[in-house]
Length: 138
Image (cartoon, rainbow, N blue to C red; front, side):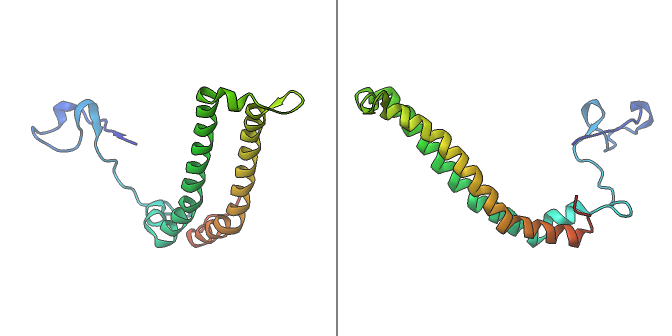
């Protein structure tokens, strides 16, 4: 987040660095963490945090890709394969209706799979990072 500098323009020497246009500095001043506060920069730069992000991405990116492909397949079938989508499976239930309902089922399944993955693989690492940083679990 940019830092607003409240130094009057007349108080600065010409060419003095500090405030950019409008009194907003390009880089906020780095202040050391106060007593009892975690050092977020150190946490962000730690190899444990990088491993946590890799673990998170290992699940999220493939799952998001699979779901988007599944959704786009459904949309394309609905748009261009009307004969296939209008075939009756039983009673008034068509292939399109069944695949549409499966969109909801797959969303719930992905959510449950992520919750399980997070509990097993992400939450223990987050707890370890919080313990190292000295942050109380809420």
